[in-house]
Length: 421
Image (cartoon, rainbow, N blue to C red; front, side, top):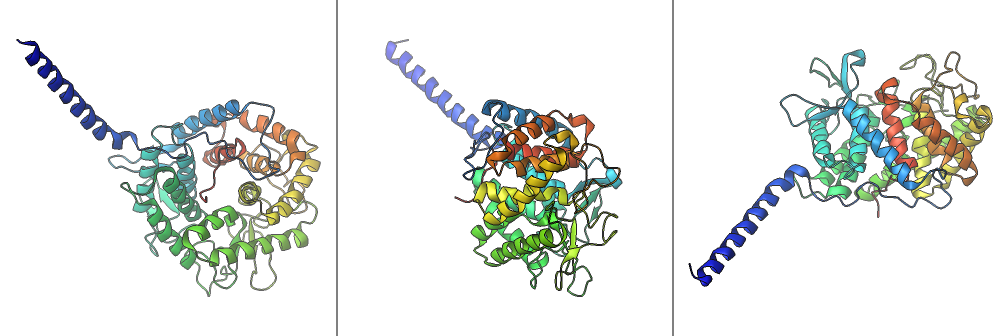
């Protein structure tokens, strides 16, 4: 064979290899996901004056979060047999497989952990498809609040907090992966937000309704769950929709929370799980209003308030957040003597431990850590809570405690970014 023929054959082989390589990359790209624009870790520069734990390196913070994420993922992210759907496991409590609150948490976590987990986009899309398959009766854009282990849904109503987090996760997904793929995240978010505003926001008080099943004539029309107030979410919602009603929601609820602190918790600054009589003179809900005898106390719903409110200061520097959180920080440091071990799982609005709640609950501990981030004077307290929080083992706690712990660890480590420019 002449040298010219040999050279031509070699060139042809090289061309075929390049073509095959291109085809192979094109084929595998959708399987392994597309480029992440904000891969973990992000090391966000938070609002001036906010702090992170400073007794360990940033690399240690990042690794601690990613290691716990994989433990959490392995236990709580489940696949629906025979479907491209995933859900966040509620561990079968009350025969529930999944609740919309958990689905929202999981979708936010997965969008933030992109690249730390190469499967993040595929997992997120499967979580989204599960949400789509389990909408409630009033709107196909709102999720039925509970799905049971027998495969059925309680599709009569939504749960406002779950819908709010799912909607926010879609904004994260749009910024993380763009909306030109199989799922148009930004359009899905806008559809959800229109439904949330229509069915889950009281148009008279601009408070958050408990669910989309509350009608104007209902006794609960002027009641709200305090932990549904997520001001940093709402600022993002206003930005993407240009709907000024979100500003009214923010203003009305900041005013409400300030009133509750002044009237009912001037020393501790604590907010109750549920607030009623919003159309007249707002007050803590009575015992057994909806869930327990502690509905008017700082219990397993309101424990999220320090995290939700402090995040608005951490990302946006809102002074209203600062005023609310400063009171809580002052009280919690005094009542615990700066020792996280002394934290209890529930308090009265006067700041006393709920009787019998002298045990560790991560869903209470982690939000206090996020609150501590808002002032440099809390540095040692924040360091102490971080060490205390991460020392608890995933196997010893349930879905709720572990998931709130992970969400808050992402914030505390400096890796919670804003969807707004």
